[in-house]
Length: 188
Ligand SMILES: [Ca+2]
Ligand SMILES: [Ca+2]
Image (tube, rainbow, N blue to C red):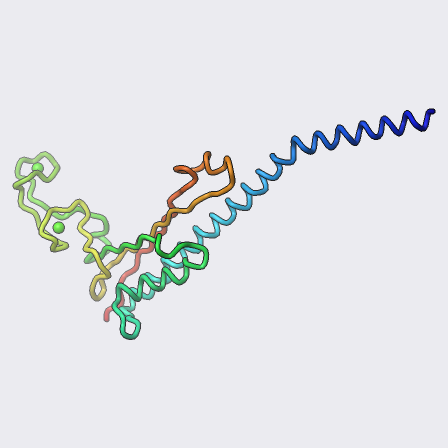
């Protein structure tokens, strides 16, 4: 009799444990997936930064692959490296060149005729990047010439797939990974 009672008690205890596990398991699985996905996203971010840095280093030497252009050479470098875990077609690669480090992200100089500190229509300006319009960033699109300073920027829309996590992070589970690298071109 006594043995049977203990047996029943054990059975009910095991049952309770099973119920508790059934409640906790989804939470544990969610946490596990969240940790794994976050880890992969961090790895992707590092990979993107390395790819951008490598491409910038290739760009600064002026190296061009055989039967290619500098633009294609630089972009191919990023796409092949980051493409290991990213969709290469979704990589957005831009580069701006400047005459010197001092000019980095600086506006085109202008004559502030009315002295209000901003460039108004009609006020003369120096079209540093030669695109025919006034720019708040004088960088010229492209890879610059000899000894110029070039900033490479690469972005990628990274998506999270774990249910619930993708509702908590970014825009519908998508965050923009960004990598930048600044180099001075070699005097080639
Ligand atoms: Ca003004
Ligand atoms: Ca301009």
